[in-house]
Length: 139
Image 1 (cartoon, rainbow, N blue to C red):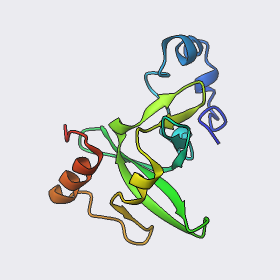
Image 2 (tube, helix red, strand yellow; image 1 turned 30 degrees about the vertical axis):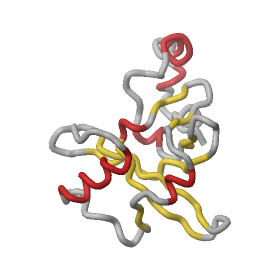
Image 3 (cartoon, helix red, strand yellow; image 1 turned 90 degrees about the vertical axis):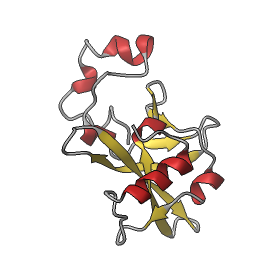
């Protein structure tokens, strides 16, 4: 399900957003977090990398820190979660999904976790390691 289908408040049907979805991209300047949960994430080749299970907000700053992606392994029998720095994702308003420049093979080797064992996201070393893996800046 994509953000248009999750839009119970009519955010994306509002005429003020319609031109920006196609003509001005990459999409509305502000989007409802709930509408983004469940959106697909693909790479530039169109390969599926997973879907967004959660959006992690830094409560003190209001900044979006990470998207938590789900990636099914072993023929869909188990699920691995990955915290991905939000700035690694780009909205594709035409396909109504997010794009990340990463191969499925690289994602399989990313620091991940299962739903019962979340990392300590406040740990500075965890954060440095994660950003290093994805090649993103901490700022």
